[in-house]
Image (tube, rainbow, N blue to C red):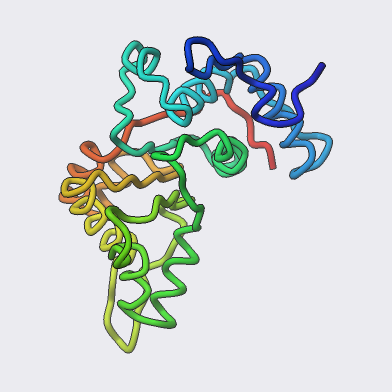
Length: 217
């Protein structure tokens, strides 16, 4: 029987959830068809990527150690345009353990918010609320698609400001950030500077899509 929700994907053994990866894949694909149309299908080339993301989301410490995934960091999902980064981050989000929960926001939206509201918009993603011990988890989607934005004549590399500020919170209290991008490491450095690139190494686990993955759009 195909799983219809996450509780169908695991069993309880010694008070721990043990996930069946094939059932997880089946659920992700069925949810994909529901949200993105019946043509949605998991590419066999992407299965290793999905496996790593699931290990991270369910916080499987033993497997993460084998895969050299640091569960205290966020994830940077890298891949070609149209390979399915965004849809996968939406579909895999329900598996997120409490510590790795996140909202999804496109980098373009964050930049447009800055153009409208100025630095108040950046504060929304970089300052804790009074009742929070750490920042709200966010996945900033499609880093590199946003434009350099002006607010009352002030130039600002909005996402660089957001990510550097979130890095400081990561160091202080392990606030987690995720990113999707089709930029290479050198393109990230060119767009955002070496200072941010070096911090991103500390903040993120790099998880990449297979280069042969075709554009799904």
